[in-house]
Length: 448
Image (cartoon, rainbow, N blue to C red; front, side):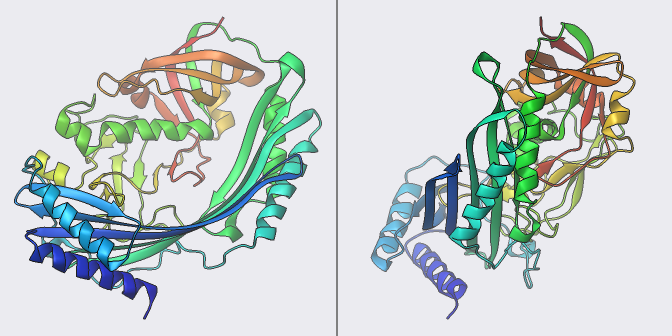
């Protein structure tokens, strides 16, 4: 019997017991995970670890009340106690009129497509050690790099299976490999640090560790001898390292939970222009080898590709079943959950489409401006849209990057920023939430 069939039988047995003990409905998720990681510094091994874990979560619904319990003990006695505890809790918690499983005719059916989210080749410990060593050595070889904060390489896999009393039963596998390093350039009070890394679903898709290391070293060198830029109202360029945070701010503002609570500055903006017409924001949960690609969400509904923002127009909220019911709408198939948590809305493989101009073309007409490569803190007010962040990067003069700057602040309002946003043509899929280099006009920049 396969592992998935064993897990399916365990979950099915739990659901039957929950129903027999008074649950009107129930669902469950089981996850098994393996991880292998290595860390070193200056060529000396600091850790080499392998871990295996499994977790199981059960949600029971009685009337309009629900309870969620989880356990990493999968013995029959422990799971029986888990069912009893969930039933007892569900009988005492307050009612929630919006909870409930999906109707059977809403569920994903058929064979689960292979989106190549699982790399079956587990790397050896020696492979991880060699990746980290190559990466760190390449970084230290960059002239001006004086120390290392450490290099690492890792691999992990997860096997997820879900089942519910409405008839849903399916699972999928995922994996991830990574390599990276952080180094220091300069000496004394003039030291600067930077990093680079590569992370992919399949190990064979990783960037060359030597290139990753060299990039980290080059980045650290470029930050030496920073200044403070002036205080000015001017264009800001967001490097791809930070541009995806603009996507995250938009997604947070249109999350169904925020909309249902009325705590978003975009709560009245559905089917209106919220971004520059040059911006199309897509979600593609079916992308091959994409982080988190999946055919169904955490409530068993089919996932779908969609333009969340289509040429500047906001087309949808991001909803699970509960928030959709609150808003009098239908779920967008965006539920996610952990073993110990209820479903909530989130996205998968979301990105701003590439524009037509290169990053250099975005910069060339800027008389004075700020090229941002790092942002500190979380300075976005999601109720008002007010935005203020500490930042570092490079100063732009007459269309050229001229010197590094730090201890800067950038400020504006997200509503205005989204409308003044222009994408470059250098989109790469790196983080799961991605964007090309972005230009935003008229931000307040505070420096010296």
